[in-house]
Length: 371
Ligand code: SF4
Ligand code: SF4
Image (tube, rainbow, N blue to C red; front, side):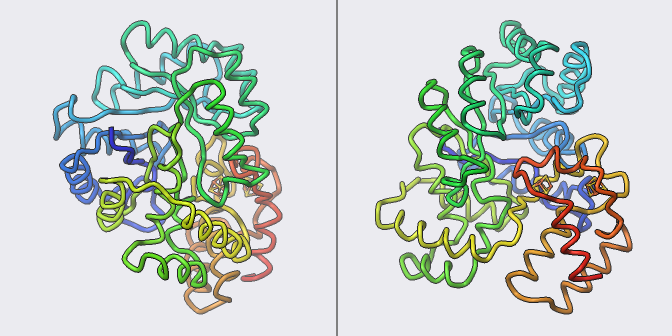
């Protein structure tokens, strides 16, 4: 199977910052092109796009293509589970929203040390195993955002899982917080294939600092920055799929071109990537991937602060300096959302951030810059 999956969490929007307003016509066009080029793997989740990603999957794929032409992965919203009965309720709702009667891949979503006890006591792993036995899902796994020691323990306790979804990209590969490499090695040790999420780190590795871009363009002028990131992840032997969260048709064209005939990263390219990592880290103020878990997980931000958007502005200012467009974008955000200065430091957001970002402190800095 070709290693590019269509991640349905950063779809094109009809209106900026309105996650539920998915541009369905554009998604349909992207879906058709994806399948026409021999790619099959679609990845969605209950909470993506303010709970509308599964509906977009239904419209783009299920209602327009034979079911056997694509493989569908969906995820149990573990953070929203309160009792054992919730698992079946969410699963039935997901089948209905997607318009299917089985999933090819099914994951417990966003497993961390904070939630693992709840998942164990409510029987989350038993539930997905039972789904597999009943033929409602074909392969079971979990997406994971924590350290390698905890992953090792979970996989030792649950040899029944078929695969693990990990955040892997060249910037996080040796990062002590994300631990991409160490988590990957744990999966290799347990014989579990890996699905890669965030290979382009929330899009940031498609738009890298000029100095890093020059390095890549000097070696391969025709290749995009995103292609280097996709190839890095896909070159890992134990990786079975790399999810691209594509937001427009041009990104789909570029990713499909990169992954149609995968050329593994060679040692000279690895050296260039190592140099690029240093440049990118120096230019990044906050390592936000725009995953939106901080605002989508219940109860969310009670003063409606657009956390990812403000952090993105902060990174823009860090790289390019404060400008009229960033100031205007800040003003527009504050008209529709709470401002960073409204933060009550309740901590709801930080507990759900897979990148372990000190959101409260970073928002204070944004308030200082623009306030
Ligand atoms: S800590 Fe601040 S930004 Fe985070 S959820 Fe609470 S009020 Fe919102
Ligand atoms: S702050 Fe954290 S949880 Fe929120 S969008 Fe960024 S990476 Fe995701």
